[in-house]
Image (spheres, rainbow, N blue to C red):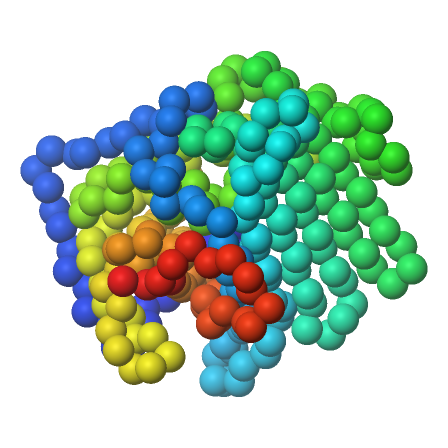
Length: 268
C-alpha cells in the first residue's frame, strides 16, 4: 500500500458528482462482483521517485504472479506471489499468499525479507476472529502473533487485485475492511472512491481509458490515486506523495518474454 497524491499531465479527468452517494460496504465472504477478471497472469511494476528538483531515482521493481492451485486447505484456491527487487540490491522482499477463489478471503500470508546474509520470515493465518502467526512455519519470527478482528478483513498487501475485482463505476465509494498482516495497528475500514474517468497514455502513445480511484486512508484528504484500465481493470498507474513532498510513481511494465501466462490485454 502506498499513500500520496499528485496530478499528471496528459490526463483528461471527467469527474462525476452524484446527488446521492453510491456506497458499497464490502464484507469478507461473498463472491466479488468481477472476480472473473482475476485470471492467471504476471504483472510487473516499476516504482521510482520524482524529487522537487526534477531528478528521478529508481526504487524497485514489483513482480506479482497470480495462479490457481490446490491451496493450504486442500481446495482449489487463488495464489499470488510478489517479488520486490530493490534497485540497489540491498533488500529482496518475497510475499506468498493464498485466497479463497472468487471471494478473495485471505487464507495465509508469508513474507520473507532478505537483507544481506539475514532472512526475516513472517507468516500468518487469517481465521474468522483472529489473524494468527503460523507456529509450524520454520523460522517464523511472528509465530506467536495474535490480532483479534471483530469482522473478516482483506489482506491490504493485495489492494490492487481486490479493487480490480470490484464493480467500478463513477461516483461509487467502496468501504473496505483491510489489514496489513503482522502490523500492530488494528484492522480497520477504508474508503476508495471512483472519482471518475481518466485517460493516460500508454508506451505507444495511445490513450488508455481508465477509472480513477482515490483514497484518503482516514486523513481527510486524498493521499493516493490509482488508474485502472476500464476493460481489464488492471492497475496501470499509482501516484503518491511522500511526507517530504517527493512524488512516488508506480507504473505497469510490458510483459517479459518469460511470462508464459497472461490474462489477455492489459489495457482496453
